[in-house]
Amino acid sequence: MLKKEISLQLKRVCHELWPELKTEVGQDFFFQTVEYTKDASFGDISSSIALQLSRRLSRNPLDLAEKIIGSLSRNFQNKFTRIEAVMPGFINFTLGKLWLSQQVTRIIEADRNYGKGDSGQNEKVQVEFISANPTGPIHLGNGRGAFLGDTLARIFSSQGYEARREYYINDIGNQLEILAESVIRRYLQKHGLKVDFPERCYQGEYIKDLAKKLTLGNVKLKDLNRLKKRIKEKILKIMIDDIQRMVQEKLKIRFNKWYYESELYRQGAVKNILEQLKAKDLIYKQEGATWIKTSAFGDDKDRVAIKANRENTYFLSDVAYHWNKFVERGFNRVVDIWGADHQGHVIRMQAVKKALGWPGRLDIIIVQLVRLISQNKEVKMSKRSGTFVTLEELVDDVGLDVARFFFLMRSSDTHMDFDLDLAKEKSEKNPVYYVQYAHARICSILKQSELRKISKQPSRIEEFDHQAEIDLLKELLRLPDLLKDVCETYEVQRLPFYTIKVAELFHNFYTQCRVINQGEVNQNRVVLIKATRVVLRNCLKLMGVSVPNSM
RNA sequence: GCCCUCGUAGCUCAACGGAUAGAGCGCCAGCCUUCUAAGCUGGUUAUAGAGGUUCAAUUCCUCUCGAGGGCACCA
Image 1 (spheres, rainbow, N blue to C red):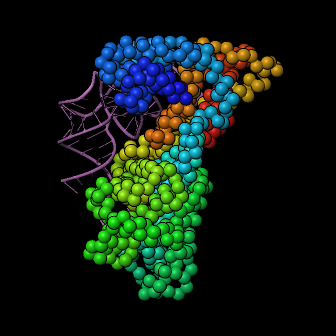
Image 2 (cartoon, chains in turn brown, green):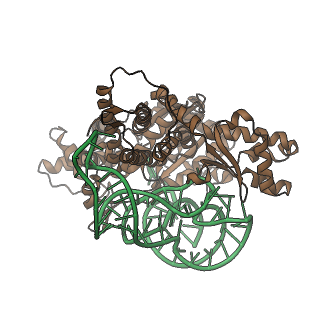
Image 3 (cartoon, rainbow, N blue to C red):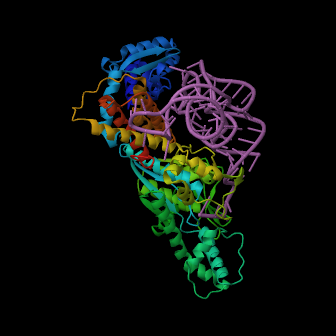
């Protein structure tokens, strides 16, 4: 909010003062840096625009900064008590107490809408995440993408985007064959037949659970292929149902759509893509397989679309899927959240998009894998070997709030370590409680102030004076800018950290300033903590964390 | 060998090219007769290494070292 306003003002002034630069350098030039400063003694918001300009005009940046300040409109300056040029060429803005104090009521009036913005302009954006294969339970590593995607989608919605969450289910392909075979073999073993269990099969315990759910009658191993065909659907359904139950009930994530890979074939999307590729001469045959010329668009080699055995590759489906997203369903922006093990797919996907000239923007977020640590040693996670910790187990163990906050705090490209032995112990010290506690404290104070308030008219807001009040208030005002930024940078971890900061400033305020003093309710402070409650609540909700009124 | 990502405090992680690199946990010392001590205050310790770009580098570029992932007619 504030950043945008300052940017616009600076831009306007610079255009007026140096019109010759407008065409020469282009608009971005004026938009360089407008940032909140870390330390209040430097002003609250700072811009280094004069530095950028000085290089261009070969003049002293400090003078330029002064000149810009002189041209800022009066009206605009009212917001700030001080606008000053600082070495080596910053323009620092210090918010005025009066204006600042008035903002509290704005926050309260906006209430649930505080933090919302319209920068999205109803842009259609899709966030695709988790999309784990239905061949095993959702494990811990999927948690990062799960909470990241969910929160990102919420933030998009809050900024006026039309955001959709989607889960892509690979319901066809080899992995499923293996799954079916694994289950059948376990089934036969359970019924006393001597059947081996090859390494290519899934070793996890859940396979035995699946086998228990089946009734196949009297079968033999030589019926394997016939059986596989027959029960594949059944097993698939059990797996998908379980994933959906877990995601919706345990993770509290609602997808707008569960997109089945098979749907792409049913709708002829795959055939369609092949024709498009052919029409653009992007496809050729070699050694019995059909290849896509991705190397002409940045990939390091061409990729197979149809194998020599006439099966389509996963890649081809994925191309069709993205065509469906961009062209058929018309998303302007697609954000795919993939695990690091899919990192190699990024370039080829972007290559195909470029080659086929789809409209829209494809952003692929790679979340690094989670490394499990137990007794100071790494525990290798793998579906095949059956050693992994499911996300459900974690959530049952530490609670959803803790799990969400924990994962959301980490940037997606951090290689994080997860210590199984410490998980429980650490969870009790999770900062989420710190934040929730701040909210609960506020509720408690408000409750008591309600009781004591003897129909006193809500007095006019006076200027806040105490440093703790002002620090808190300034922080509250940053939320709109923060959320807007996240829609571009996808740095979702900034939200939990921001929330911790607000809680910290509140706790600080709490120890230094009394809201109710010897029975007297300080109305000004009541309003301030109400605004704080709005911010905390809105942030927690965006993260999908519960908002307790008492703890 | 090639490609992607990472290397920050004893540990787990922040820092949108900017000013004094921040939290939590740990450890040490304090603070509850008044609104929730799941809190507050103080102390403790860090940018892997070497160059470069910049007025300004944890951030960008190059190289070295170290870690994870990817290099299939698997998904």
